[in-house]
Image 1 (tube, rainbow, N blue to C red):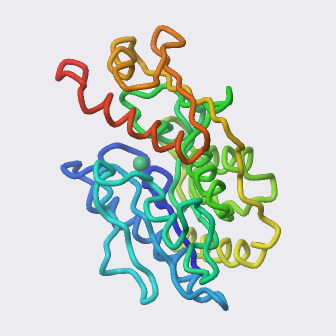
Image 2 (tube, rainbow, N blue to C red; image 1 turned 90 degrees about the vertical axis):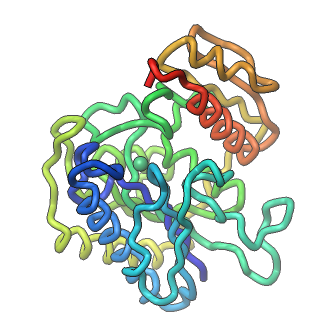
Length: 295
Ligand SMILES: [Zn+2]
């Protein structure tokens, strides 16, 4: 059994503020340690579960070069490197070992389950630490067939298209609640902190959260058979709302994209995987061309 862990940073133990989140922030190196601690706890637990042969961790935050590789246990590997050289962003390589149709081959080379570690709630969520959807500076909302999706829902549905169930989530209380609305009330979730504001939380120490993550991962693996992939049948109507209308102007220059609101654009794709790839490319394109005065 091969386990894929999508790791973000805002939902990790002790992370509450931008100073911990990017190179140059005075507390960034400690933020990396905290993120790595949560990831290692999940990876070690998964590798201790009978039948698990490999754990892949996908660093899915910011520069996507945060997790400290040298701390990973034997049996784990790491996807590191920026989103600009990826097509599946926070679940890059989740489609390894799959055919062109996305289905797993007979050799069982693909991943069997997806776990989320350190993920956060979608843009606009109340009582959540650092909520956003993909690129907080430009994206106000991403919706799929009329329903707002955060990163957990988007990544879980990409996995669903590949036939892979999402079985575990750690983050703040709000992010865990959001994950359950997409993946079921009985999803195994571990809340490592409770927001009291967007940049302030009641945090549990790593000693406690590591143990909670370990137990949660083992329970989730034990209950894998109960979890179904989040499948969203096509065609998929994807809409992206930006903070400002000029961002939508820019996004409209991509083919097949139409304006559906002052700062909202939409497009349709046959499958969720194709829609998600386009959504990411569109957001990256829009962010990349942002003039200096909008930053
Ligand atoms: Zn992040």
